[in-house]
Image 1 (cartoon, rainbow, N blue to C red):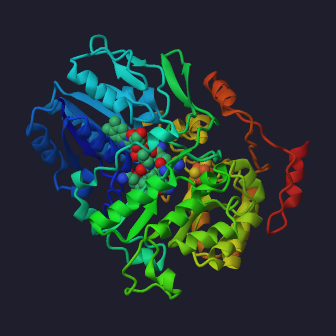
Image 2 (cartoon, helix red, strand yellow):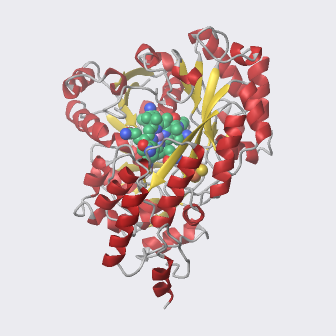
Image 3 (tube, helix red, strand yellow):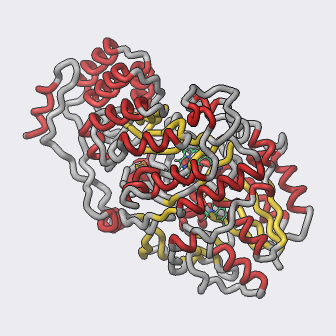
Length: 550
Ligand code: B12
Ligand code: SF4
C-alpha cells in the first residue's frame, strides 16, 4: 500500500488558522480506509517560523510514494514552496495536486509548477483513490485516468484526460466523514469563534460541514471549484484545456447524512457550533422543491441538537450549554420568512448574504438573480426571524459608476449596515477572469504568476476590472463611502466628468457561457457595451450620458 503524505497549505497567512480543509479531510479518510499509510502535515495549523526547514524535515522523515497537496488559489505562495521542496527532497515521489488552484487554471498551473506530476481537475473523491490504486499496481501511464492533467515524464508534455463523471447524490452519501483527527484539531478549536452572531462569538468547538455542491446562479466573479458539472474541455492550440460554463449539476447530501454526521461530532468532539460551507443553502432549498432545508431543521431538533436557548425562548448566553448553533449562506432572492422561521427554531444564528450591490443595473449585469429591493427585504426578513444577516458588499464591478456608489451608501444608511466592501476580483475560474485575462496580465507586465501570487482576500486590490475607475480611484472611493462622505464624492464626480466624455457600461450576455468561452478563446474578448442605459447620479449628471447615444 502507498505511503501518502498530505500537506495542507497556509490559508490567510496574516490571520489565525480557522478552517480545517473539508475536502482534503475526506480524501484522507478514504485513503486510510483503502489501507494506505497516510500522514498529514497541516502547515496552515502549525505556521512554523521556518516553513522550509519544517517541510524538509517532514519530507525526509519517510520514503513517501505520494505527496498530495492543494487548496484555494490564494494559497499559491504556500503551495509553491511545498511543491518546490517536495521535488527537491523526494525526487521519486509522485506529486499530486488538486483543489481550486489547480482546477481553475489547469494547464497554466501545470506549466507554472513543473514539480506537479499529476493534477486532479475538479472532484477528487473517485480520482484520488484511483491514482493511489494505480501507484500500488506500479502503473505510470495516466492517459486512462479520468479527470486528470498529467505531465509526461519522458518529454515533459502536458495532457488532459477525459473528465470523470461526478458522484451522484447516493454516492455522495456514501462518503466517509472527514478524518478530522488526522489534523491538529486543538489548534483549530482555539480559533472556533465566528464573529457573526452572539452564539458564534462564544463558539469554543466549531466544525465546518459542506452539505451541498454548487449554486444555480451565475455571478460573474464567482466559481464553483469544478464540482458542479460546469467544466468542458477545448483545444487551445497548446493542447486541451478546461473551461467553465453555466451548466449546473446541483447535488446535496441527504438531511439524514448531514444531521447524523453533526450528531456524531457532537457526541465525539463535543462541538458547539457548525458552519455550513455550502456556497448557497437557498438554491439547494429551491432545487429540492423546498424540502431539503425544512427536513434538515426537523431532524436537527429530532436528533437533540436544538440549542437550549431557542428551545426555552430566551436570549443566547453562556448558560446555553446544550445543542448546536449554526450559520451558513443565504440568497436574498430565494429566501422566505417560513424557511427562516424553521431555521431559527433549529438553531441558525447567522446567515451570510452576498448582497454585493444595491443598484439594479449592477445586480442584473452580475448574474445574481436579485434586485436592490429584494436585498433590503431579505435583510429585514432575516432580522425579524431572529437570525443575524451578514451583508457582503463588493465595489469595483466592471460597470460600477456613481449611481451604484450612491445607491450602496443610501442602503447602508437605511439598513444601518456597517460594511467595508470587497473589491471585485477576477479570481481564476470566474467568468471575469477569462473575459478580462488580457487586462489582468497588462496590470502585471504579462506575468500570470505575479497576479496569482498577489491574490489574497478581496479586501485588497489586485487586478482592477472596473471600466470607469482606476485602482487608486477605487481605493479612495471606498474610503469615502464608508465615511458616508457624499460631499467629497460629488466633488470627485464633477472632476471625473472634466476628464472623461463617456461612461462605459459593459453589458454581459446571459446566453450560454459555453459559447462565450469559445468566443473568448478564439480571441474575441470584447463584450457588448450598452450605450442606451440612462444613469442618474446624485449630483444630477444625467445629461452627460446622452452623448453615449450618438
Ligand atoms: C471554507 C472556504 C474558505 C476558508 C478556507 C478553507 C480552507 N481551509 O482552505 C476561508 C474562509 C479562509 C476562505 C477564504 C476565501 N475564499 Co473560500 N471558500 C471556502 C468554501 C466556502 C468551502 C471550501 C470547501 O471546503 N469546499 C468543499 C470541499 C469538498 O471542496 P474542496 O475543499 O475544494 O475539495 C475538493 C476538491 O477541490 C479537491 N481537493 C481539494 N483539496 C485537495 C487536495 C488534494 C491533494 C487533492 C488531490 C484534491 C483536493 O478534492 C475535494 C473533493 O472533490 C468555498 C465554497 C465551497 N462551498 O466550496 C469557498 C471558495 C473555495 N473560496 C473562494 C474565495 C474566492 C475565497 C476568498 C478569496 C474570499 C474573499 N473574498 O476574500 C478568500 C481567500 C482567503 C485567502 N487569503 O486565502 C472561492 C474560490 C476561489 C479560487 N479560485 O480558489 C470559493 C470556491 C467560493 C466561491 N464560490 O467563489 N474560503
Ligand atoms: S449566488 Fe453566491 S454562490 Fe451563487 S454564483 Fe452568486 S456568488 Fe456564487
